[in-house]
Image 1 (cartoon, rainbow over the protein chains, first blue to last red):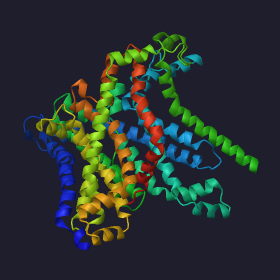
Image 2 (cartoon, chains in turn red, orange):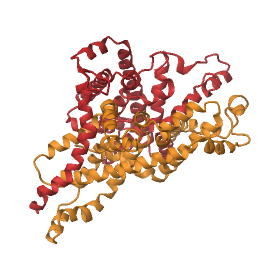
Image 3 (cartoon, chains in turn blue, green):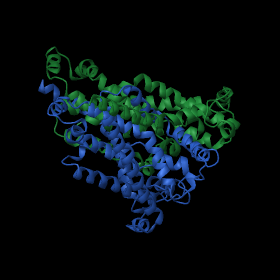
Image 4 (tube, helix red, strand yellow):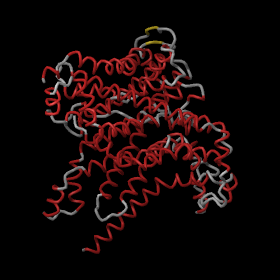
Length: 300
Length: 278
């Protein structure tokens, strides 16, 4: 029995394809990103080693700081709209008196399955300054508060964050809702026998028990915010000016538009650091945990 | 007291319905304008139901736009990537969860890196690598990275599922003379089917919606997947709103139907996702 399960040849056959494939297609390029961030590289030649030059330039680059800040803004909006609202909706929906839960769950989730292009096109028509739904509503209300939403450099980044949150709110909600429902009901029953109100038991029992899930959700939301890209490309192309650049957008542009591959790698490395830092902080704030449990996985 | 409770439930239902509307209304608006003329969308009837549904928009969308090609590309890359992911990860998860070897902690850590590192970060060297492999502008340019970047999560789900199976199954199989391969394929694999389905749906959602790779790796229109293909289309046909709406609808209906059929499974997969403990 043990001999069978310790069969070296079988282990090799079972694990090698996966390890090699992952190593070549995922791990090696990440290493390359780090290495090439120290090079002046055009993507064709091997490049010349320039030490910290790229980093020095990056830190003096206004676009970098703008992108960095935008990542924070988007992450903050996603935390509020996805995680906090998701938690709130979960607590509300757990009330057994509420009917049509299935309908509500499904309607919240449907935007998740739409293509990101469809979502952005849909919202860019709703936000259209001349004929968009939102400005039409202001018009109908007789208000002159009409905006060119996506061309306003103070608002645009929030709109982008909102569109992303609109699409993925249901995703986070279902994660939180499902794990809230997988908590054994005994605790809540015991609390209600002891006379606790629903909201008291929510705050003192349910939310603390959801800590692991909240950590996952926060990591999803924050790294997702830092990594945002598709919405920039589809809604504003980074504009107006550089107002809606993100680090991914900057990486992408340096490499594929400006042909500065090395510099692009540098901003990508900063993106990794930003994500790792956020994951670290979340893990410290929300308690013990080996890094293995945190998911940095994200949708674009 | 009873009455007050009813009232709270009432208020809470309203809150939930408002959120459901926020999620659904934009989609209804899209359905609406896919069936309207430009004039109706812009001036005469922006909010209401289409007065005389312009089915011709859908005809125009099909004839002027390759929604079917993009759709086919999306289905193909997603299905092949899923096949690749599970071919690699099923034996790997089994070996890590059930077999005995020294380096399995290290191997687990290595594959788990995929959870932290977003595809964006490796984009530049990856594109060079794909080009050097002669795969730029082929389906392979999408499928290989999709497989590599989507094995970590199914791995977590599957290794938990494999670990939960009782030891006696393998013992009985070995006593009956089955090899480790036979045991894996005929006994252990069928038992983790539910976990496979969950992990698959989870991975499929992510791959279906991925936007960056097809825009970077694919320049030929005939190979683009939906997110990138539609984006090109939007740029070209921005004046014909009705037809554009119809195209967007055609791109969305299949996934919405799929979701409505499998919603339970998808939600289960997310529970697994949320509940996985190292």
